[in-house]
Every structure is written in structure tokens, then in C-alpha cells.
Length: 93
Image (cartoon, rainbow, N blue to C red; front, side, top):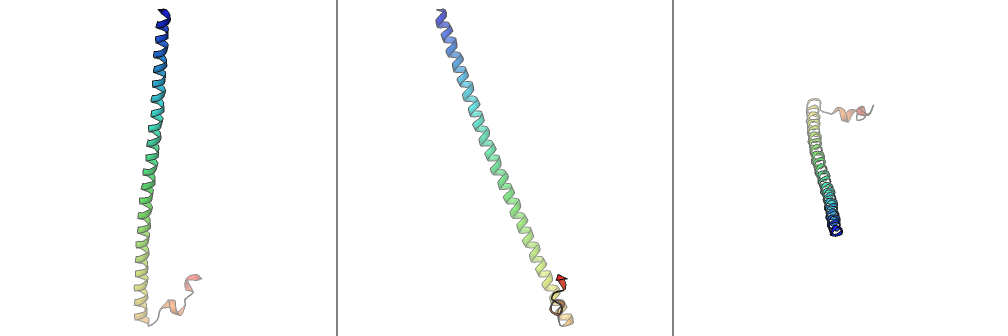
């Protein structure tokens, strides 16, 4: 009788340890999934930010080209020639 009681307690203890082990493994698995999801979200945020910066830079470059073109046009209309045509290497000195 005492032996059966001890055997039942050992079986219950083993089952409890297996359940605890299964819980810890599942917890680690969920934690890994959460970390991977967080990394994917961070990467997506970085991609969006980079795309936004690239678009802003393209807009700035377009505005710069338009303003340079307008300045050159005004200069040609007022002087009949452009300083870039008369001294093309002035920016490099």
C-alpha cells in the first residue's frame, strides 16, 4: 500500500515536471515568434522611412534643377549669355 502511494506520487511529480517543461518550451517558442515579428515590423518601419527620405531628396533635387534652369533662363534673357557658358569651370576652382 505504501509502495503504491509512493509510486502514484512519483508519477504525479513526473507529470508535473513534464507539464512545466512543456510550458517553458512553449513560452520560449512564443517569445521567439514575438521577437521575429518585432524585427519584421522594425525592418518595415525602416523601409518606409528610407523611402520617405528618398522621395524628399528627389523632390529637393527637382526643385533645385528647376530653380537653376529659371536662373539660367533669366541670366540669358538679361545678358544674352550665361556665366556657365562663358566660364564653365568656375564651380571647380
